[in-house]
Length: 87
Image (cartoon, rainbow, N blue to C red; front, side, top):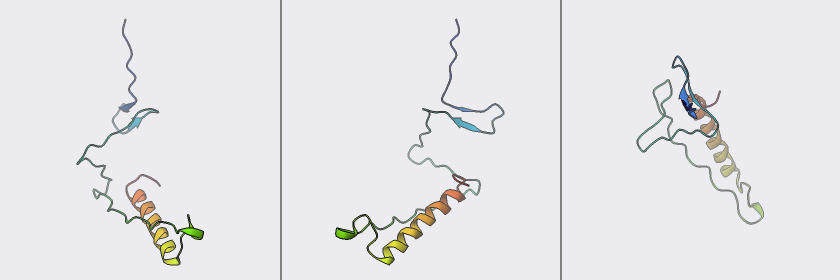
């Protein structure tokens, strides 16, 4: 009796796509990286400032902090697009 092995990660026939099925995962070890077609890895993105405190808890207590958060989110979206993670 031959048992069929169904991996959760595999390269499609023809080799043009790598598939990760539900329950599968890709682990990148220390020093490993995913490089987009451009060959350039995304630069690190500055962390957004923390929200306010007291009455402003969970919000941005100054316009400057709000603008810094918006800039961080925009940089993250741009990096994801440049890396081909999102369209």
